[in-house]
Length: 150
Length: 155
Image (cartoon, rainbow over all chains, first blue to last red; front, side):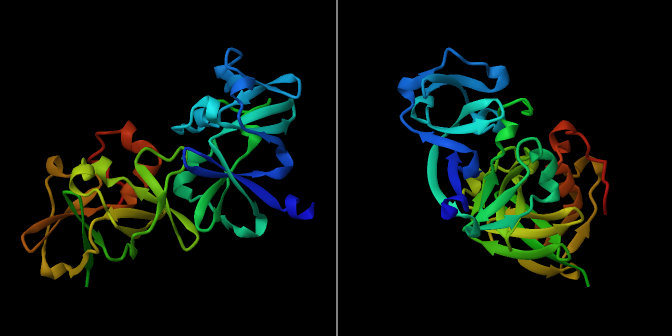
């Protein structure tokens, strides 16, 4: 258990790497096509669909919209990472789950001053994994009362 | 003695004061990140630091898809505001100022982001204003103020 809690989940969106704290994750669900109801969307809130999860419907958020990322993966082929938020469970759509990686593998890396203004609305931390920048995904920016939609 | 690094990117010849040049990297991988400023094409990782790669093609209208699909060198330069990288198709030359001719360009012919022209062996090289380019291309002023040719803040 201690090993797991010292790991982070790596996922990709449009080829870009992100890392997510395991403590935020309830479950990872692939093959979501049958459980989706795209009719229940609220684009203004960043919600692109609803997903049936454990006998209830939960909101599905596609972070690619806010991050302005072009993804070649269709909605039905995405993977849903179920997160536990202040307002209950919600699903985060990602292109691909890559791996779990131990915290020791990540190196701190500051976002340079010249990029801070452009990125501050979407992410505030980047770490390096094998010399590749990985964005620290901050769920509260995407769903919940604290989320700021752009 | 002033010296310049001379580089080429697509159809653009450019010169940078050697005082600004930190290093030249070959075949280094660059990465796209979300919400990069429009004039930043990617970032590269150097010494565990992120370095914005400035999109010279956009600024100077270089058609690099046709003329230089592979820009295998990155010139890492130090500006007043931080380190940035510029793409280059070749390693570049280091040339002392007296080996060429410096020319100031009349205002209406001056390219935005340049401070003059260095002529070396009958080739013209735009001398880049690194401080101007670094701040303008990363803070979003570039596209919102297309006609700021005379608004030189530095040098």
